[in-house]
Figure 1 (cartoon, rainbow, N blue to C red):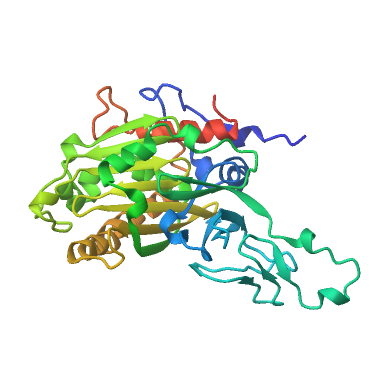
Figure 2: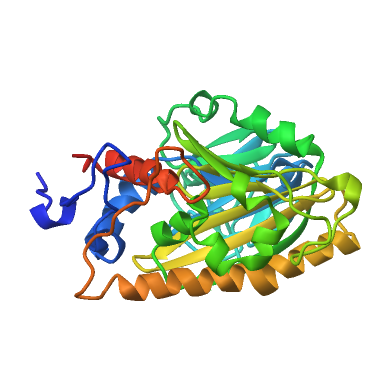
Amino acid sequence: MNVIPRHICDTGKFSSDPEKSYTLPAHYYIDPEIYAREREAIFFKSWNYACHAGQVAEAGAFATCMVADQNIAVTRGHDGVLRAFYNVCSHRAHELLKGCGKANVITCPYHAWTYHMDGGLRTAVGQKKVEGFAREEFALKPVRLEEHGGFVFVNLDLAAAPLAGATGSLADDINGFCGNVPELKFAHRLSYEIKANWKTVVENFLECYHCSVAHPAFVDLVDIENYRTKTYGIYSSHISPPGRPDNAAYRFSEGLTRDFAAWWLWPNATFNVFPGPTNITVLHMMPTGPETTLEHFDFFFLEANPSECERQAIHYVDGTLQPEDIGLVESVQRGLHSRGYKQGRLMVDRDRSFNSEHGLHHFHSLVLRQLGDLP
């Protein structure tokens, strides 16, 4: 039986009461042993965002994603069924598919083994000369998959409970702000390699305490005084009335003053509706190590070719908002190594104002519960 060292699961002054709680201790963000536990207990046991359902709507379509260090492929078989597999050849483990696209068959670039889009082995060069070769033994290994709210999610735990049963009204809430999510089309992806622990990156999204200080254009885009965070089971909502159409971030028509609405879904995906034309963006924050994160920012609009307003919004995210946030979280990550810092106090007020950090406490509680460290 493996015994976890006491210092690894020491939560310090973390409290179940958000108004009295401190943050997670610094070692939760830098210790390789904690990251190894998170991979197994969190990422390999949770539902992870893979893609928009529209990206794999046609027979032969595929999309790939990472779950920590595990490469996963989602495919639409020629029988119309959507499936997910570990994205490695059953011969010598070469990676198979890259990015998104369409294919009649899956072909390994190494030794040209081919697979049907349903994962079954089609051909293996020289198989007839190999004694006892069992084709069925070498099908691609399956992963759990679920379509929910217009998106596709995967789970490496084949016994996992359905995602839909844990998300309550989330899908309906998103559609209520956005419109019909399944009808939207993928338009653009931004990618960033960030030198920070995945939790540091997620936490930055979960509070707007820093917005007035670090994001002046975003504060102009929304009505920051009425920005509110609410927590539920495995997700939280972050909603604000819109600011001025002629704000400093990007301009949108007077008649398109939809609310800013965002939802974080455990463990590491956010779904965001910005003021302006019908849209949704997905921010996916996947750890690549104890102190590194790969971040994708996917944009979905009514049309695959963005309008001028939509191009401005993409430019704002890429040129202003993301550089501001990346600078913040990378500085925090460096600071977590300081001998002068062990644990901070969460700023949670009774009114749950726009400055309140109760969304972080909700996230921290889920992390600790999944690791088995909740005091």
